[in-house]
Length: 203
Figure 1: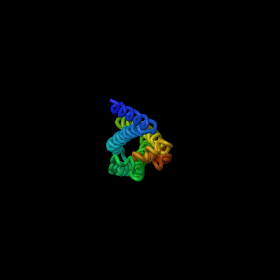
Figure 2: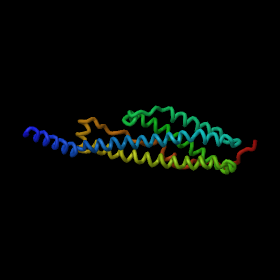
Figure 3: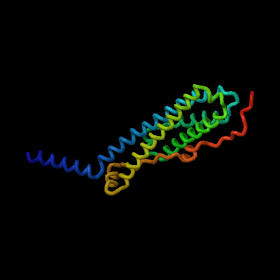
Figure 4: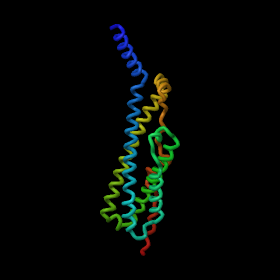
């Protein structure tokens, strides 16, 4: 009876110790970061699936800038070619490459939408307008998902670097996670400058 009581007390004490040292918080934030990352990937995938339809609708417009279309197609190919694994979350270089590729696609799509303003018939195309609205909504969801992931990782990394929870991090190998950041995010969030001084040439 005494041994059983002792075992219960030790288990209770161990639970309190783990709680106090941040073990449970590491578990919670790790799971939250994985869920947030999954949502980021879902939204990026959603955007990638929109691109072929957007490109197809724009191709129907005579004399649309081929360089802009080519850049979008190439950026999508590069973004979808990167293999994302669970290890990506803990690999700063892999995360950097992934975000750089997604940033290039964001930039290319932003320019395509800006250039499309030069084509009244394209703007009057209901299919293109619907795709544009869907794309804008997807970009907003990407921003929300990314911000949620960034916030969770910041909490996790703060816990991993703060005393005394940093001791728990070392004991249980909870290394800080690489932050998510787009190298040219400032440029991506700003609409590109497009020269409207000339009109599209007639075929």
